[in-house]
Length: 258
Figure 1 (cartoon, helix red, strand yellow):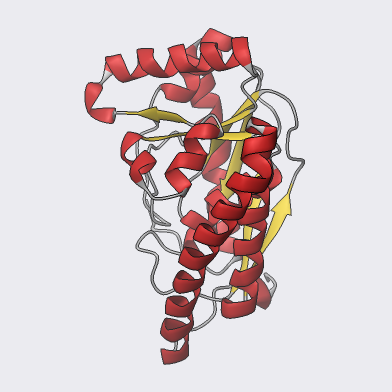
Figure 2 (tube, helix red, strand yellow):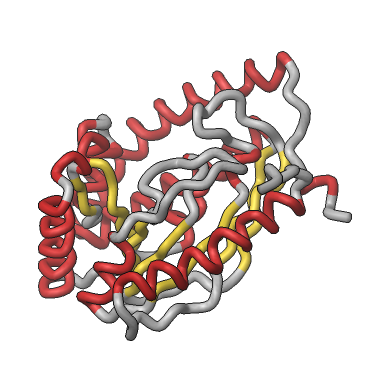
């Protein structure tokens, strides 16, 4: 039987109140940490300063999630330190915070529209995140590969986080894995680090309400990107999906029967 603390807590009226308070805190903290970071970190230290601000911001939001909501997390596996591709299950904004906090030079492949988010969008751009317009199809893939090669040639890629499903997927749902992870891995020959999670059981796709408990994100064994793009993508899916399902089952979630 799984640890009861690792299961989502019950939703009560207080849960809704504290979720609202937490979101107000996020907005204020983003503005204040962003302003401080711009003056004291980004201007004097450049990209290194951007990554330091990102670490402080994500750590603060994770801490406040515990304070306001009783939501904690457990990180399993070893976060990579060098250039690599992180192929991660994506269920929640919470799994973004966890990954970003534990990767020293994190960068996301993200929707282009997110660059318009105040403060966060600007810092994401400066951190080396790669925006893509999914409506462009194959052209978006070319843009992404070009941005990856430019980053490697200038300041280093860091840990490039790609969500193979392309968006947040609620627990129990399955979506076809998109080719981006495989294509980038084949082009760069960088190692691929899969990551599983059950964070969506606590902080769902809609973001309301946020439940207490202990979410788990787990780094899985590295996949060598020596094969073709389809082979790499299949290898990622073969480990990320079963492990994420197991983490959700451990937290008491009943997976839909096939």
